[in-house]
Structures are given as structure tokens and as C-alpha cells.
Image (tube, rainbow, N blue to C red; front, side, top):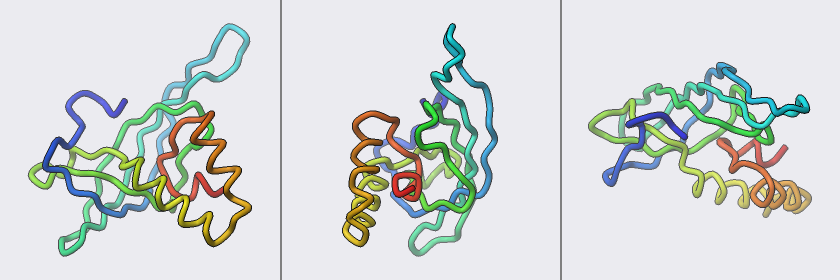
Length: 129
């Protein structure tokens, strides 16, 4: 899902990020013309605690329910020895989405629908649209 050899491994650190660029890639379409999945290359600016920020890209495949957008908050896991090896920390993204639900209970149905029927979002804001 994130490309060969991209996962950060057991020593991964979780950090907040911001989506700074999105390249739309290939789109898988079924025989009826319905989009099954879209491939994105997402450039994320990562803000680690107590360290310099950096940028890294992630290739991801989504069915379009929660496509990434520039400026959205996200959370990533990265290998401190190789900062190019990152992945989205979808558990942390989900926690932050439910933090937003506490502030705006009307978002609960959106968040729960995405996690039940869609792809796990790659950003916190995508779950709160």
C-alpha cells in the first residue's frame, strides 16, 4: 500500500504532519466506469518533537472517499535513521478525528461512515468534511 520498503519498522516515531503537495496518479476503473481506486503521491511536511522539520512523500491508494488535500493535518510514522521511510499513522489520525467529534458532534456520522465503509483517511480533516 505504501510502496516497497517504505514502512518505517519497529523503531518508528510518530509525528504531526501537514500535506503540502498531492500528485494524482493512476485511477482504477471497473467495466461500468466506476472508480475503484485512485493512486496518489502525497508530500508531507513532518514536524517531529525536538527535531528539525522535513518533507517526505508517500504513495497511497484510496477509493476516493477521503482523498488528501493540501494543508490538511495528518500524522505519520517515520524511521529516524531514514526519514524517507514514512507511513500514515491511521490510528492516530482516527483519534484526532474523534477529538474533533467531541467539539462538533455532528461530525460523528461522517467519521463513523468513513471508517465503516470507506478507506481509512490519510488526514484528520478528511474525516471531518
